[in-house]
Image 1 (cartoon, one colour):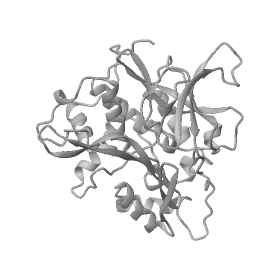
Image 2 (cartoon, helix red, strand yellow):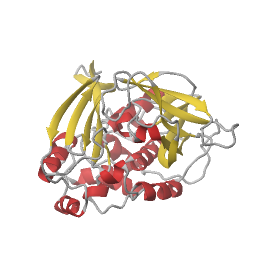
Image 3 (tube, rainbow, N blue to C red):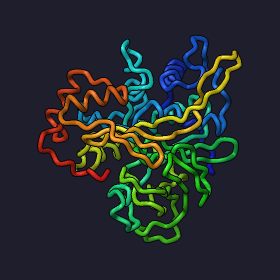
Length: 362
């Protein structure tokens, strides 16, 4: 795999932004006033997992700016930090572990900047094409893919390369995936993941191969991951082609404006439920350590659901906009201001009495 530690300019966070980001996602030790960049462990697979879990448990996958905002998705790292981290710091009544996130290009670009700031210098991103199987919630099994509409992160650490993704909604992998074909990695039950290499059906040059992330859903529960038992395509990518912010600007422009997609037609918010283990610290104080992801909170249109293992529990159902706004704060720690709340009045995704959810299978 090519070395991506070249000196070309990459969007970076300064030291104060990195430390604030780590504190926001409750990275171990980051709440201490004495915590510094020197306290971050050297790059390793274990550190990569810890950063990924802390991020997933704090920063939601959401598209609120398209419905409760000005509709403009800003992808420069400074603007992303302000939205996801900085806004929380300014809120004296903030909910710890809550706050805004973004969709794939937002959260993955900011997370990539964090990784590089934490010493993962051989980290880069590439574009992805989401499968029509995922887009149609399993109805389309043709093996075809959409246009460029996703971002994936690649990280080489300790001589191994991993796929890292914190922005794939209900189907996001819950740990880094080793870039080796056919290796099965357990995910948030009931899901499992693997990577395969193959030539997409649409390619005229049959000698070209891409990597494809596949998902197996053990039980099939209707929450956006298609049927039980089958390995189904999630998205394809090529780790040998590096994408930059200018590429994602073009992709995001289409994704955020195209009618009939899940992002423009549905208010969506997804956040991981972390698996915590009690541990004894060096000071003899009993604490908790993140050891993985055990479930997800899912807001899709008019409901909030909790999914842990094969069990799905409905936590809230919305009859009006006030219900949804209250649920965003209660379950995700997202507090909308008055201007943001009013923005939904201009959008067709506003909850109305006779509204029919066109994506109810999601």
